[in-house]
Image (cartoon, rainbow, N blue to C red):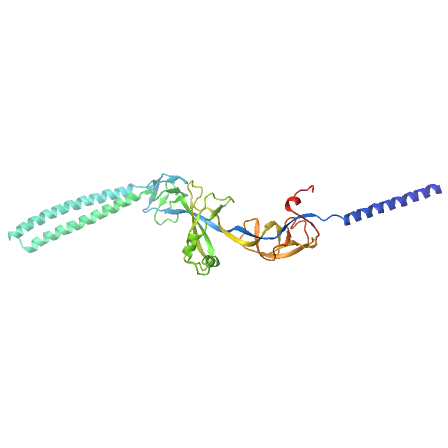
Length: 384
């Protein structure tokens, strides 16, 4: 019995020593783990073509609000929203009954006034002959002439009223003042239209060419003129073609050209309105759309780093510089405001020849970590 208890004790001690030995080996293996392979890049001077982005609003070359010139109920809408129309095409018809009656009445007054003029002329001619024969006095002859002049004035008034009535009748047919695309139509048949209405009947936009409106601040405008050494008009003519990024992030296939810059800076926003012209042959761009104007800026002899190599702490940008001991050192940097969405232009904080980590930033890397630097192509191979 004692022999069996001694044997069990020896086995237990052996097991505990074996477990301790395994644990020590595991800890030693963890402590001696290899440093992670991280892609790095050597910072060097280069040339970049970055874009400055500005929010833009798109408007047709002509956006004409269609408003009625007379009051009346809409009896017919001849077009639909989004329809292409030609100059002079009929858009709306307003109730013509009262305006046609006004034309008929004015025409009758003209006819009556014309008859009165003819009668007064006959009387005046007759009086003139009698006066020449000394049958009537000069006073009576002058009265006849005055009656003729009065009848002629009444005829002129009636003719003016007829022109006005016909013009009002013509206003009952609302036509398009230009080629374009019909906008929204808030008022339909049966709605009352009047010149004082807040909403227009519709808007006709000429979208064959469109304007993209954006804003430049005072600093941007001063930089365009090189501090006043170059006129703004000359610099606008020399500006490169601009690109339009649409609301869905796609790029409009046709380039545009900056046409004008407003001569007045808004005191509220501190910006001036800039207008770029884009051709729109297929009608892809619509008035009222939004997007971004991208103005290319070529910079030479600048430090360019990937955006993925940076991280932010309290609105400051940092990179991990890899020193000669292959340890990471977090380094603050400043970058230019222009970027292409993938790279930054570094203005301070880095010098050519330094190595920076371009992978694992924000996840794997920490301050003072030892790494194995590798080319990005090598680091992307998991097996290696």
